Structure formats: structure tokens, C-alpha cells
Image (tube, rainbow over all chains, first blue to last red; front, side, top):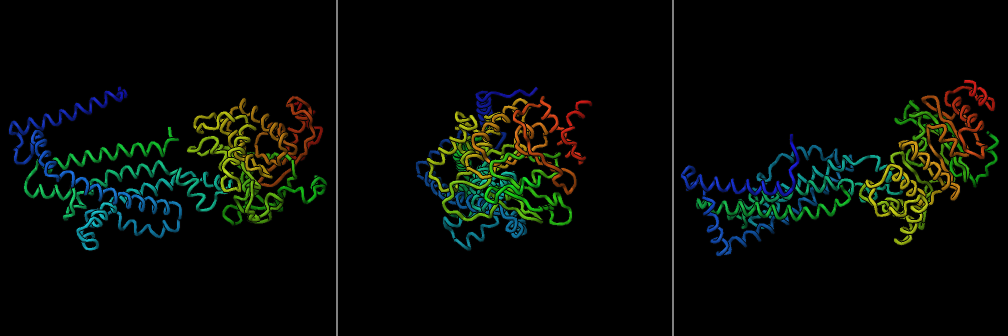
Length: 254
Length: 276
């Protein structure tokens, strides 16, 4: 019974769902079903956004957060994927780090905030650190399992044709063969990074998260929602742009 | 048979195994034992035996992918790497049963795989790879990805990849075993043509008696065990490789006996097998 919907039908359905969502929300606030002090009406979001833009807060918050996000994403992804690849290839290192990984893995990014303040102060570096940590694990595990699942027969092929050294295996086999898994990790990290921007800026480093915290302490719920939507938009843009990178890297895949 | 080995001068020995034994865990459970084999330059040797007897393992020992637990390997192609800094080829190359192409590389990129790291510039590598593709009749498929190829075409790319490194010894591990009979026959003919053009030394693993008799100049039988050993060999003297000829059927009957561990029925075999 389940037939595949065409792309345009899906897009239309998605848009209709959004319209319905905001329409019901607006109706609920207007009718008094939801108290307007608790939930801002969607119609109040436009003016709130314009206020933020006129004051220059919105643009500045985006620039600041983008700075933390890109830097943290880059550092966390490179280190996470890099260590994941190394552990996937070197059993000795993998065994050595297994206990440490199990110990540190469950610690959420938010729990590192006190250390971020202690080590880096209220600075870009502190916020970057928190984002990098949360992105690190996603990339570590994605790369690790991608490398572990590389067909061992490809290593034999590499040895037979003069690429049996560590470097030969890394560049001729492991990186291209595990690229789909590594790319999937990067993409998940892209979303996780935006989520941890809020945690990273919670303690006062300026940016979208900090601005949200300020607004919520003033009970300016409309401003909070404006920044929620801003973050959703930024995520959608980064994910969309990354889609091109992914498609290019994996252009050999069907 | 022994006299044939003595007739080969040392310079013509491409590869040899002396009393080789192999156990995967290094213990007493030998897969192969007391295997001695000499491959002379220009020979096409079929290594024939039932599935799972250790033919591929023997091939990997010759390729240097596995080290024998006892005994030695020798010969020009199996000499330890001399560290030639300006090598433009490799001493050995292998064709795998499953073609084993890299899905992210084009056909040309796959053929160039073994050339990377050799002392050749980019255009030389490309020219060598294209030359090898021409030899297997795939010059027009250079830019295609492996998933766009048929099973037979994939195997041809595997052959081109091995040939392009100009090996002294070409090791083929049941390369046509997974193909349909029609494709297999046409690839056998093609391999025969390529061998007549290049006169590579080839060791071709197969469990198919007819395939061994169509291609080889000498058939070596690996059977028994574990541990398996060489139970016989025949130097083929057959101008025409037609399965319907008495000579072909006699050879087939003798090989069947060697695989079963029975005494060699000799030239009488055809007449006996014809009675059945």
C-alpha cells in the first residue's frame, strides 16, 4: 500500500504541514487557549525580529555564533575523525584508548562548561571548546566504525600492489573506503554543533545562545523564539551547503 | 618430471617453492606441507585441485602475502625486495577471483593503482594503463566506474591492472571462477591470446580440469590432506586445445586420477574413460 511520493508532492506536503503548524499555533494563542504571556503568537515574531535587526543584535549574534560554530566544528571534526581513523587502523591504539573512550564518551558537552570557563575564561576559545567536544565524539565513532568495516580484502589488494605500508593503506584504501561513514559523521556533527552553540554561550560568551538567555531572563519569549528559528535556519543552510560537499566527495556512489 | 626441473637454468627460474609448509596458526595444523614447485620463464602453469585444498594459500605464499611456516621461496620474482629506487614495474602481480576493483576509482584509475609509487611520471602511468586496457579490449571504458561494468569486464580490468605493472610472474586466483560459462570461455580465449603476445610466466589457480587443459603448458595437481601436497603434474603436449580430442580426454582422465589420489593411468586412460 505504501507508495513512494514524488519529490514535489513531498515538498508541498512539508510546506502545508508548516503552514498548518503556525496556523494552529496562532489560533491557539488568539483564542486564549495558550496564554500569550507563556507562548508568543507567530504574528508577534515578525516585529520582534525587526526590532532585533534594527538594533544590530541579530546580525552580531549570528556572526559571533557562526565564529564559535565554525571553529568548534572544524577542530572537533578534524580531531574526532582523525583519532577515529587512527584507532580504527591501529589495534594497539584502539585497545589502549578503549577504557578512556568509555569513560569520557557519556559526559555531555554542557558538563564541560565549568572547565571551559576555568581554562579559557569567557572567550571565543571557551565556547569553541564546548562545541568541539560535542562534535568530537560523533565524528570519532562514525570514523572508527567506518574504518573498522573496511573490507579486509582491500588491504590484501593494497599489499599486492605495493601499497601495504601504513601511509599507503591510509590514503589508497582507508580514506576513500570509509568516506561515506566519515561524511555521515560530519553531517550529524553539523547539527549537533548548532545544538551545543546554546550550551557553549550559556555562560555569557556573546552569540545567539547568549542573546536567547538574556531574552528569556526578561521573559521576552518572542525574542527567544526568533533566535530558535534563526538557529533552525542556520542549520538548514549549513546542512544544505554540506550536501554539495558530500555529493562531490562521494560522486562515485550510485 | 624430475629431469625437467634439472633442465631449467638458474636464471630462468622465475619463482620456486622448496619444501614449503604452511599452518595458519603457526602450530601443527598444516594446510600445506612438503610442497616444492619451480616456475620457469614463459611457462603457463595451472595449479589444479579441489576447492578449499589450499591453492589460494599457495598463491599467496608466492605473492609474498603470506610467509611459509617452513621451507623457502626463491626465484627472480620472489627475491626479497632489493629496494630499487627507480623501479618502473613490480616483480609479481595478482588477479583475484572477485576482481576486487576499488569502487571509487574509474577503470583507468583502477588500472593505475599498481603503478602509483613507481618511478614513472603521470603521463607515462596513463599511457601504460591505457596500453593494458587496449590489451584486454576495454580502452573505451577507461572513464567508467566499476559498478557500470559487467562481471566479465570487471575481471578484464583486474587482468589489465596486473599486466600494467609488467610483472615477471602473474598469479591468477581462479579469476574466471565466478563468471557464467559463455563469458568464461571468451575470457579464457582472450587470456590465451594475451599470453601468446606477452609470454608472461603465469600461475593460474583453478578447480576446473577443462580450464586447466585449455590454458596451461603444464598442470600441477594439489590435493589430499590436510596437509595437502602436490600429487602429480603433467607437461601438456597438445597443439589443439579441443575437449573433443582423444589427447584432451586422456589428459583429463589422468588429472582426475591425480586429484583422487589414484595411480596415474597414463596414456591408456582415454580408452578406459571411453568405455564408461
